[in-house]
Image (cartoon, rainbow, N blue to C red; front, top):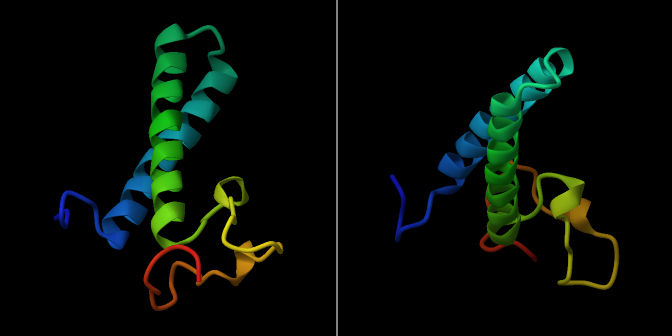
Length: 95
């Protein structure tokens, strides 16, 4: 259940997993059906949803992937210093 109109950390991770699965399946399908426009549109839709969810997660809890590691909180390359998803959550994205 969203809290204050926002998904909880667990809900957001589940959403990322769901759309990531859809993206991965479409990649495999498009490898064998490259001219399927409906599949291509579905892939683009789910890819956009995945990127939005990853960016939201990175903003709130720290990056899950290197492409969302816009670590503007420090001047050094410290994105891996953020807590891992299975570690106890810290408040906010950057420490």
